[in-house]
Image 1 (cartoon, one colour):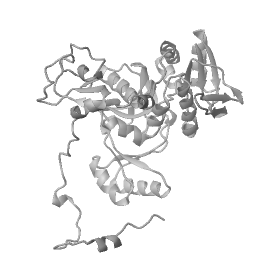
Image 2 (cartoon, one colour):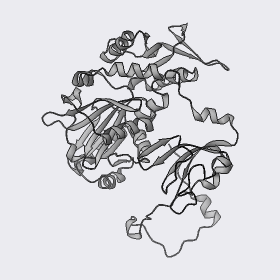
Image 3 (cartoon, rainbow, N blue to C red):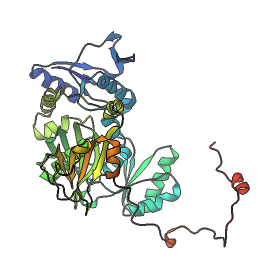
Image 4 (cartoon, rainbow, N blue to C red):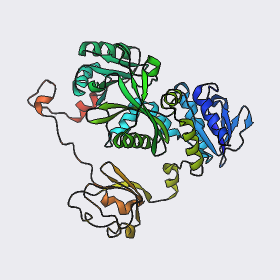
Length: 415
């Protein structure tokens, strides 16, 4: 296998270990500075140049994209994807995980534990948001940050309000997050490679420091995660579109709570803590998967007119409940079930004799017209605000708005 490791720091521990692991396994490996690429676009021939020379062929790419070069780095990874080179992490997966708000938005629609989080811009929304996440103390986080930078603990509502106001005055966007008290100063870092956790450690803060990052003086201890924590870490990485990830979790009273995912996890701390060959596990995985490059369905489906991918729900009382996939008649309608979701269980390529149950969700590919009637109408919100929930507003006995008056009422233009 010819492997390219994209890294701007050839001497850092993680890059050196990945190179050593590949060479020990007799693979040809090159470490390429991400910033030295040039992207060429031409009809039918996407190309890359490295140090002003046409890049030779590689079988696989392992991106180690730093936060400061996310935009250019993901553009380079995306170009490798267009050239049908296997990328250990996809460009969209890196982009999704790099933004804390975006990653939590993606995870929030799935049955996976995350701390209650709010994102606000208007100063008037700060206090209600703090109450919604459970009140003080709360965690204040910058949208982008690594190694614990930009993570603050506000012990009171007043200090939280002051912190947010200061950060917003500096044009910083912040998240307000529930403080998981039972996990104070402790978290778990799991390294996910493919569909398994290959190593895990618990990080414990020292002294009064609430952040457990090793760069903040935290100490580590190896840990064997139970099935629930392993499944949560793997599912979170897959949902985010990452094959290789560092998944940080809090040990909440209700189970694992995902804090964030890292598409370029450092290997030094976890290898020294666990004494496991994490770099070797990553290289072995890439070698086994190299013939399966990322396929962007959004690009491929544009050539299949009238076909697409959607999610079909099987509600209580549905005619499909109790029938097998074969008996459902979906295939007769040119609809193929790719994956079944049953609670937190994922069943890929469900067999024809799999019995459908109420609550199942089927990810299907087929004729959009045939699937139209099977897609449930979007449910209305269960709760509408009551009158007393609304802010006090001036009340008029009766309001008449004619067209002439309406034409004079408009939003001011942005300055």
